[in-house]
Every structure is written in C-alpha cells, then in structure tokens.
Image 1 (cartoon, rainbow, N blue to C red):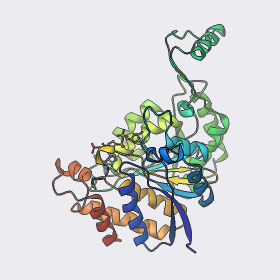
Image 2 (spheres, protein in one colour):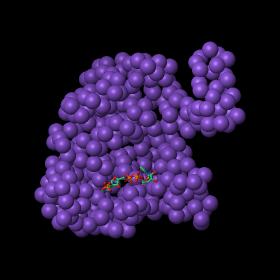
Image 3 (cartoon, protein in one colour):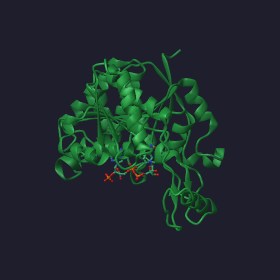
Image 4 (cartoon, protein in one colour):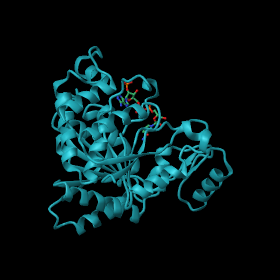
Amino acid sequence: MAKHTVTLIPGDGIGPELTTAMRRVVDATGVDIEWEVAEAGADVIETYGTPLPESTLESIRRNKVAIKGPITTPVGTGFRSVNVAIRKELDLYACLRPAFSIPGSGARYDDIDLVIVRENTEDLYAGIEFEQGSEDAAELIRFVADRGAGVIRPDSGLSLKPISITGTQRIVRFAFDYAIANGRKKVTAVHKANILKMSDGLFLKVAREVAEEYKDSGVEFEDYIVDATCMQLVLHPEWWDVLVLPNLYGDIVSDLSAGLIGGLGIAMGANIGAECAVFEPVHGSAPKYAGKDMANPTAEILSAMLMLKHLGETEAADRILSAVRKVIGEGTHVTYDIKRSNTGSTEGAVGTQAYADALIAAL
Ligand code: NAP
C-alpha cells in the first residue's frame, strides 16, 4: 500500500499537461504516492450533469489531500466556479499563497519572501448577490432606505460583504499558527477598516483580539490599510512577512505578489480546511495555450512542493524547490514566459515536459 493516497484533479485547459509534468517530477523524487485521478470541469458536465461530480468530492474527503490543475469557469451554463465550489463544499477556509523570489524568473525584485493568507469563505465572495432590476434587489433597496441606512440608486445591482467573528478568528489563528510553525516573525492584518467599519472594522477588531492570544508567541502583529499595503508591497516588498486578508483583498494582493515574483507561471497555492487540503496554482486554465506543451508548470509543481510539506515529506519538497531554483537560475531550459521576462523574446524556450525533464535531471 502506498504511503500516501492523493486525489489528483487534472482540470482542463492547460491543467492536464501541467499536472502530468507535476506528477512526473513528484514521482521522480521517489516519494510513495498513489494518485487517485478524479474528474471536474466543463468537459464532464455532459457525463455527470455537473462540473463537480460528487465522486470527486468524496475522493478528496476520503484522502484528505488533493492537488488540482486549473479549471475553466464555464460562461453562460448556469454553473458557478468549480474552484469556488470545492473550497465551499470542503470548507477550505484558508488560502495560502507563499510568494518568494526565484532568481532567474525575470522578476523585478530578488529579495521577496512573503506569505499571503487569504480568507476563503466569506466577504464579497460569499455569492450573495441581487440582480439589478429584480424584485429582491428592489426590496433590499427599500429596506435600506426604510432603516435610514442610506440611499441606493434604484437601478443598482447589489453584492453583500459578510465578515464574521468566527471566520476572522479562524483565519487569523491560521496565520499565527502558520507563522509559528514556519519560523516567521510578523503577521500583518490587511483591511479597509477606516471606511468599511461594520465588516473590515470587525475583521480588524477580531484580528487584534486573536493577536492578544499570541502575544507571547514571539510573532509580532501589525495592521495595514489595503491601499497602502499595495503601494508598500511595490516599494518595499522585502518588508513583508505573513499577511492575513479578507477574501477579496487577498485575491487581489496575491496576484500583485505573483507579479512581484515573476508572474503567474510560478505562483503556487493551497486551500486548507480543518479536514482537507487542496493544492493548486494561482493561475487559471489559460485556454489559448491548452495542448500546446508551452505553459510553465512551475506553479503546479511548487503547489505540489507545498503538498509534500503538508504530507511531512520535507526532503522531497526541498529537493523539488532546489531543482526549480537551479533550472530557472541557469535559464537554459525554461518555458516561454520566463524566457520572455528575461530576454524580451520567447526564442530558445523549451516546452512544459522538457522543462519537467530538466527538473527531474536536477533533483
Ligand atoms: P489565466 O488562465 O491565469 O491566464 C492568464 C495569463 O496568465 C495567460 O494568458 C498567460 O499570460 C499567463 N499564465 C497563466 N498561467 C500560466 C502558466 N502556467 N505559464 C505561463 N503563463 C501563464 O487567466 P484567465 O485567462 O483569465 O482565465 C482562464 C480561465 O481559468 C477562466 O475560466 C477562469 O475562470 C479560470 N480560472 C481558474 C482558476 C482555478 O482553477 N483555480 C484560477 C483562475 C482562473 P501570457 O499569455 O501573457 O503569457
């Protein structure tokens, strides 16, 4: 029996080729994983009547650990994002996105080592929306007016931003626990509490209370307004350590961080809950590159690196990271995006699988 059984969701678009490369590299470390392949995405709607079959969720619940390729959000089918549905169904409340410099990636900076901890279940992503022109929207607009809470233009569409004590406590505790377990020095809570007093104001109040629980942990706490955070991330990316953010700011700031370290091709991620963890790159399914053996699998492979750490396979994880650093640092066997960042041209780039071959040789 294999030491670990992991659910593998290849996804669609560039997902299958990236997960193939990832699996080859992970297997080459010799770590004992049985991959239980499970389907999800637009391609399976015809067979299962849904892009997220129950059998796929069952597989993740059973194995507790999954890694996935990106999945396209079908437009105009009535189905919501599979990626969001997986996070919701399994209550994967913490989205972890480490962003660190890999010399040779073509990034503007070479001294970044920060971690984004994004709340994954509430905020404007709760999916509570009222369509412009609907009776429900009109009723809510009347309710707000009747309570003297404000005037909303009658032709508005509305999205609610719930932030709870429960949701904030667990994400801020996650950030502190992660900081302690990984030898980090500081947790910064990012918010817009000066304007959004009832939602972000609560987030900040609860974050401060949780920080009190950790005051003897040796991890420092501070808070920062989101717009100032964006500016300082660009001016002084080396300042930051662990950032904990509500859902929407977390989404935006993690893409900003991906840009700081050299782009989506290398930005890794994980969605973690009390029971299960699902690892995935930050980027999407990049349909224009699907099947072309061009896309950079580093983000997928570094997501697997995070997964190996989660499984306690630290040595295999470290070997993969060293191989990535070596091959990207040398710059001769890199995919088009890295080549383009470094030279302004994609000439001399290698394909997805040839890059994986170079990593395997460097393990
Ligand atoms: P995207 O798939 O992330 O691609 C946007 C651009 O980012 C690409 O055109 C490419 O830029 C660059 N890129 C992304 N992945 C790359 C890789 N592995 N290697 C090199 N370059 C890479 O974003 P999108 O086109 O907006 O989204 C496509 C679909 O994916 C949508 O349906 C979206 O909903 C879905 N999505 C899924 C997930 C997920 O599964 N978790 C996450 C985000 C989006 P250049 O062309 O400039 O090289």
